[in-house]
Each structure stands twice: as C-alpha cells, then as structure tokens.
Image 1 (cartoon, rainbow, N blue to C red):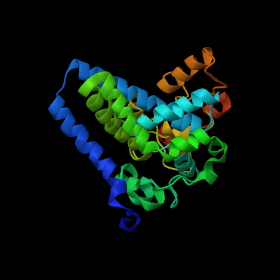
Image 2 (image 1 turned 135 degrees about the vertical axis):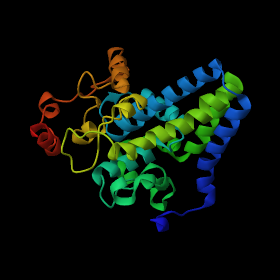
Image 3 (image 1 turned 180 degrees about the horizontal axis):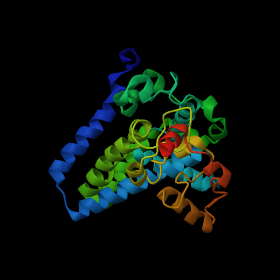
Image 4 (image 1 turned 90 degrees about the vertical axis):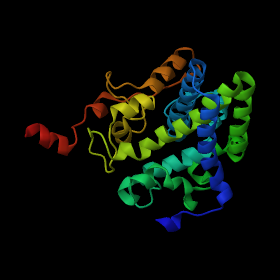
Length: 282
C-alpha cells in the first residue's frame, strides 16, 4: 500500500495546512454563537453542493438543469476544496465501476479502514482528471476551467468569506467547515462500507447508516445508492431522511432543476439481502 503513496510534498501540503490552519484559527478566534452560525452555514452549503451537485448531478446525472445553474454548482462546489467537479465525477464513477474491487481507490475491503478514509487522498493514481470518464461534462469549457483551477477558487472563496464575515467567516465558515466536510464526506468511503445495515445484496460492502445520512444530507443511505444509482433520492422510504433530495424537489418546483429522478417502487421493494432474510427467519 505504501508504495501507492507518492507525489510531491507540495501537492500534499495544502491538505495538512488546512487542518493546522483550522485548528490554530479556531483557538485564536474562539467560539461564539456568531462563529457557530458561520460553521453551520458553511458546512451546510458545502455538504449540499457536494451531495446534490458533485455527486448526484455531475457524477450520476440524476436530474437536469441549465448551464448557468450547472456552472454555479461547480463554482460553489470548489469552496469545499474536494478538487474540481470533473475530477470528482470521474473518480466517483470509477468507484462505482470497481466498488470494493482491487481497482477501487478507497475500498476498506482492499486496503483497510484508514486507507479508505483518508490515505487514498495521497495516492498517485488519485491525481489528475480522467476526462475520458466524463466526456459528457468535459465538453463544457467553463467546467474544464474550474476543474483546472480548483485550488485557486478554494482560496478565493476564503477571501470572500473573510471580507464578508471577518475572522469568524474565514476560520469557522471556511477553514473549519472545509475540514469537517472533508471527514464527514470521507466517512461515506470508510464507515459506510463497514458499519450499518444492508437491505440490498449488492456486490460491494455498502451499508445504510442513519447517523451518516443525517450528517451528509442523505448520503448515508449508501446501500440504497449502490443498489440503484440512477435515483436522486437515496433515502428510499419516507423515514429515511434525505435533505439533499428535499432541496432538489423544492428547486424543481421553481424550475431551477428538472426531471429529478426517484426510485421505482419495484426497485425499492426488491427482496432484502440474503443475510438479513436469514436473521429474520431465525
């Protein structure tokens, strides 16, 4: 595994620098209700654009929208500092293609929990954008531009929040929000393939985790998602909270997005996974 970690230290430095800056800034600026509002707002915006934008739109195309809102999803998504939308989508499509197989970059089954959670970030094969995997998106020059300059825009978002919200805006609304969103997102790669329930007998180890679903606005219904990837709704049942889907449906009512895909009843109600069926019988 270690031989897969490589590349220039300059490429890895921003990741660690963000952690140090977030911790140092939080200690220096201090906690307050104002800081809490910035953190909640900064986290919520980032989580939505990652889940509803980078994941459900760019990666899976589970709904449609115009070119302007598509651009805004990509632009605001860069504030999450999870690389560009084309890189993210290409990487994620590869994950589904080889989920929990040797070619999957962040599989707990293949390389262990901590590799799946964070060490894969430093893998050489994780660098660069596979444009061949996102031909549908790469035809937009504005998306290619944002993808090439993702780091610059992440820094610019910090400058904007500093100008608008002062040090609370920069530290809590940007730096701490970024690091928190990173690790909660990473939990889908790690925890959601280790802890939780399996309703559907997928070929991978994906699991449904209600706590992660709340923290990630619906992404924690990971076994559901791996069972049926075409749906913008990952909480298949009414009691499976899926905030990103609710917001998408609201945006659909005002015609910002359209054709938001749900899950067909026959797909949702397919037989439960054999291991759960055996437990139910016992």
